[in-house]
Length: 71
Image 1 (tube, helix red, strand yellow):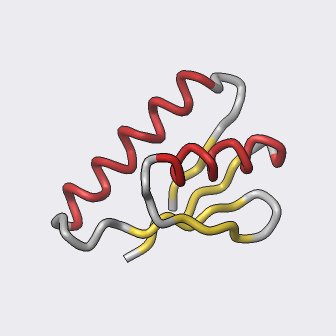
Image 2 (cartoon, rainbow, N blue to C red):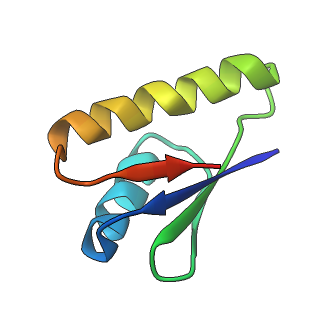
């Protein structure tokens, strides 16, 4: 299962992509302002979503002016 993210600042999309990649999260670009993060298969879906949400919160603390929508 995948989680789609939309980033309000297109330039910040690359930063978020790098952030997830440095944490060994499977992630790919989707369009100019989107990312698709794959949920880790070894975790249950709820745990995997929670892990991605926590990482996203950390990134947003470092980038407070950027909004990320999760689908």
